[in-house]
Length: 341
Image 1 (cartoon, rainbow, N blue to C red):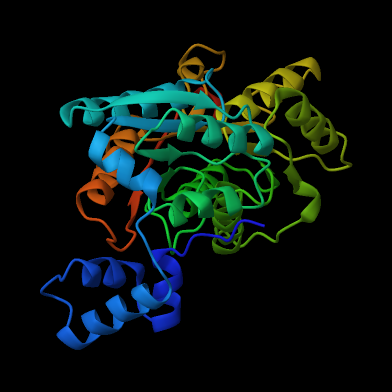
Image 2 (cartoon, rainbow, N blue to C red):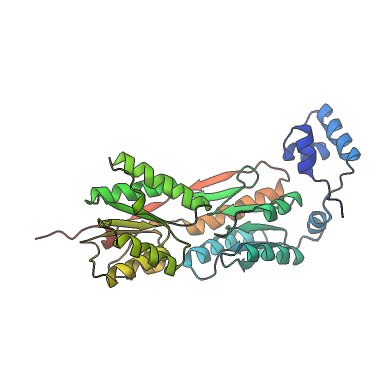
């Protein structure tokens, strides 16, 4: 069996200090005490620590490539994020290699392996909906390569992240429904392990409490983010003895499927049921009725993710930083009942 290479993380854990402290201590950084520098270097010598050859090779060769892994290549959401990443990357003389996981954990792992072989300098990633095991990301961290997560994130104590305030956005949607007369408010979430699912559900529950409404489990559905799964979730909701009078979904793709199924059932939007989406895809403005949705600052999200990436490139061992961006609710026809004359 090949013995695993000792990493900065191992030394940091043994000394009870941060990875950034070990990294700076090995470089005789003035912020680190002389006594601690001696301890760090002595332990590194005893453990036969050597810098990761992949990371060192990249540092010397400066391939100036960033591996960007997204769940799919079709939605405007991800294309807008990528445009923001590319804009900042270009300013730094870098370019991106884009790869899709197709919402598959296995494909996500393969993408990382292939991009490593392509000698990217690091990664900017949105986690797939199947991902529950994060060991493939731990390998990137152990290799001392820059890694940033956006939108769907994990390992926030170890990796810089950029997200939106999902909690507040979902809370405001619930309030918006209540203000427009809805009392049976349903939410179609995504896979429970996704950070966005957890945060948006928490906002939904908080909004219900603040509006004086009791959480009813039958009005909470999960789907796998596909139109077919969202359709089945909608069918279950509409089949209830007392169906919801308002529905919002974890993203616009889900809500477009909801809208289609509601129409098939002969139910009027918004007169019989109010509808709100999340992410404000382009189609939100061309469907009938136009879809109320939460606007994500997607281009800015890409810019910030790339900015965090270059912070890692320029400051080895820096503590991970989380950035949370604000959203806004754009009210259109799908969530406001027509005034009766």
